[in-house]
Length: 109
Image 1: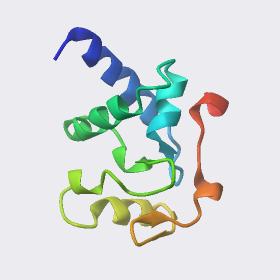
Image 2: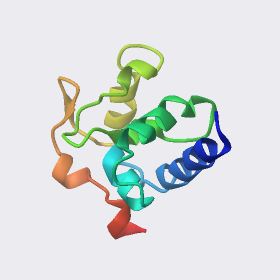
Image 3: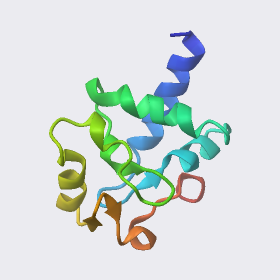
């Protein structure tokens, strides 16, 4: 990968590490915060590559609260289990209390 991509990934990880316990954000919100509003997919790639880092990737979902990254976690329900352990309500791979647990890095950081 290019150095720019790696540094973007590290910037993504820095944001994700600041998501509070029991809260979630989405790919687009992270991209917007980093000044790359059209790079939500690249944020997703960063999340896919984050499993060897100390990054709470389970706290990043799509804009509708869907656990779109769950197939990148070991086991079939690990992402959901991690979120539920933090008090996030998940049903059919979707966060039901998204309005309550949503964290916007642009407003919070």
